[in-house]
Picture (tube, rainbow, N blue to C red):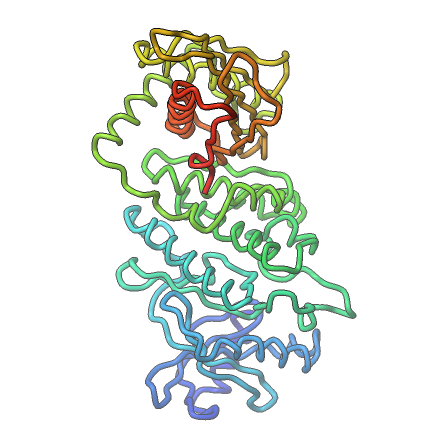
Amino acid sequence: MDSTKAKEWENRFQGKTIEKWTVKSLIDNGKSAAVFLAEGGEGPVALKIFDDELIKRYGDDSQIARIDRELTLVGKDHPNMVRILGGGVFEENHFIVMEFLDGPSLSKCLADVPEANVPTLVAQLVSACEFLEANDLAHRDIKPANIVILDDYKRLVLLDFGVLKPVGDSDGPTDVDGQPIFIGTLQYSSPEFLLRKETNDKNGWRALSLYQVGAVVHDLVMRRPIFEEFVNPYAALVNAVQFEHPNIGSETAPSFLVDACRMALVKDPERRLAVSNWDSFRAPPVLSAAEEARKRVGQRALMAQIESVGPPVDKTADEAELLDTVIEGLKIEFRRIRQGNSTLIPPLEISRTSLHSNELVVRMQASSLLKLAKGLVIDVKVKIIDADAQAIGIFLSATPGLHHRADAPETEVFRGPYSSGAVSDRIEAAVFISLDHAQQNIDGPVNLDQLGVA
């Protein structure tokens, strides 16, 4: 609906009472509807009247079904979701009534949101998504224009449930002649949803929601809309959604949010689910001051060694280049651990099983001085999950003796975007747990489950 038609509708509906709400003035208009300020018994509300062109295009039954889906949210309140109060048909025009939110959309105030508030706002958006998911519902159009910012940029509210979908239901209201069509907003759509190749189950819709939340976080971190340089022509945007990897980096934004954003924007939905979840967008537990200082010191030392080996891998590097970088970084990490604990750990023999192998073998020779009767072998395997996002998995197994046992259980100790600091603590913990096991002369492989990815 264009602004001219919206103003015509303001003149047409102003002063009319629709059920118990009296229309006062036009608030805004979008592609499919005009939103009016109205007054009722509970005070001001937002009354959304849908463009009658939608009825001509999709049919009356289809529009009623879409409104009925929105009305399933009546009584399902969440502090970060707009409350739906009612809806129906008035003079052959379909409408929805919701609480009035006196604040700007995120798309209009992106540059004004204080950076310190971003983690809290993101956590609120995630909470709303989890609430919908718990009710087996998918929003499908999460974007800055569908988010209102309130309370001096401290509260976020998700709105516009026009393409809400019960998980597992047929598309029905958003199909045309039985064929699924693209709905929502291309700029904030995941590649599989653009092509309507999403999986119609909880995981499939979670993959879409994670991507869309990641796109919102991109905008908050980078202070500009995702793929804004590709919005015209339309074909360029279609191509960008499928193949372009947006640059995400900030010297001031929390690193966990930058990492969560990168992982959520992984193109392939299965890989996305492998490296991203709702907890990724929440701040990790606060470490003690000593642990934080130790981590920073270790990261600086390791980064200095890695930089001496060569430049970091560009985010667009292919899998082979990323694998080589991770393997070399792990070699450096094991050497760093030994150098920092030379009175506790015997000399290490570190070797890659073959030139381009994803496997690293670390051997400690037997040492009576260090109570290591049989020696110790730690086997490390690296899995590249998504090279563009630098997402990896690291699997460890350990066996007392000088030969690795094939039946030693592997434990995934790390999953996410690779950086030396991210894997440092887990590798060191694995070394000492394995060494402790071997010093006790316990038969059988080491149990590293306590280090497993949560």
